[in-house]
Length: 129
Image (cartoon, rainbow, N blue to C red):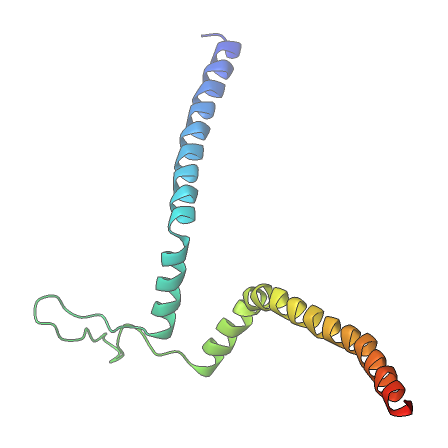
């Protein structure tokens, strides 16, 4: 093989490898997209409610050599960091609600400004007659 043929063969091999990796990544992303809700909920529930690993034979909790169980409950710092990471998601949910509420409140005030003046003028006219 000439050096050019070696380079071309190497290029084809690398392209095939890249195509295979791209297919694997696309399959992983499509799985994540299809199961995003359940993956998110299971992740959050495993963070909030950790389970102790058990031995399948006798059902007793597995104890490590340093006398600690497999998972520890969430500490206050863990809860705050979880809350801090969820703030952008909460803001994305709350923002449209706040906008619609403020639009309704502004509408009521504007309508109240115009309708209250008409009522006052109308009542003054009735008193004068």
